[in-house]
Image (cartoon, rainbow over all chains, first blue to last red; front, side):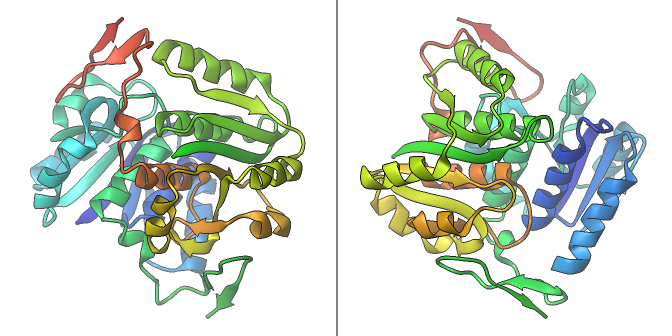
Length: 176
Length: 176
């Protein structure tokens, strides 16, 4: 499944680390690209691009101004839209259904504060990772991990310049 | 499995939201308690306690000063210790092994910056959720989700004063 993330309503300073963690999680768990709306922050883009350059792959991060236009265009192009929200239907109840659509490209919307009702309407699936308050980073990680059956995060990037050598105890990396 | 989280080296201001998200993720994914070290921040404790009061359950958050003493005590009391680190062994390769120990209590250590070598040594398992840089929130969420097979996050709390009614579209809650 081609996975693209849309992170809504980024706020300068306050959300800097959260948005960075969302982008890193998207990349590490197999998404191809992240778009974000709200305040434009080129320092986040630079930090993600630096990591992608070092650790490999083709992950992209891009700012857009108008989330509704973007989502509507996606809908027209036959991609499916998943909106992660604690108010939605639990992932376990939709996982088989979602996996059947693995030939489609999938836009995963990660809300910030106060997601407008229009986005609930436009989404094909409003999906909850449990119904307790937690974290958009946690929700995205579990969603992508489950959808990709934990495989995407194990993928190696042939163009990486640094790679971890897994160890029972301690740290080891290889420059390639 | 009784799951307790140890979040290392919390820093005032800079880590406020990350530590809050770690605690909320711990609670939502079935951990019983979170301890943290570094800077003491009672505002985080208050916000987690407020959420637990409203959403139910017995989740506890507590500050400790000395992580090594705490970990050594845990080890003496026959709990197992998992340290989440991108340098460790991939979760998939240890999951069966960990599930065999589900009668033990398990301390899950979530690092901040620069985890000392002693913690890698004290851990029974240094576990990676993939070997790419991402997020301690993502790592904790996926670890707990996999260990509990997604069940813990679906548990209802009988003492909650607010509960979500899952919806295909829109938001609905019930005051209980």
